[in-house]
Length: 89
Image (tube, rainbow, N blue to C red; front, side, top):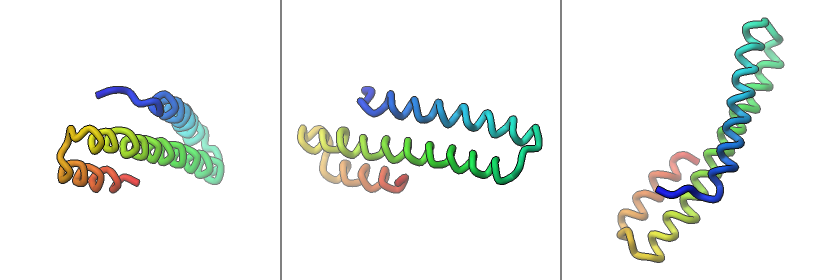
């Protein structure tokens, strides 16, 4: 499987989320306010959600489109894969 042009951006987003998640753990250990922690958790959740959407859209735009154009995958298989991956949106 090849790397897509969106993967470096997704990796950056996930590493940023990872850093925020680590800081949330420290915030909890230090007894910081629940409001501050909830805000940081929301930021991590949004980052992961956006990374997931980018990955799914990239797969549809490139992998599935390429499979249809090249005929490397049957229509039924391509449709099944499309339905399967869109569950994650």
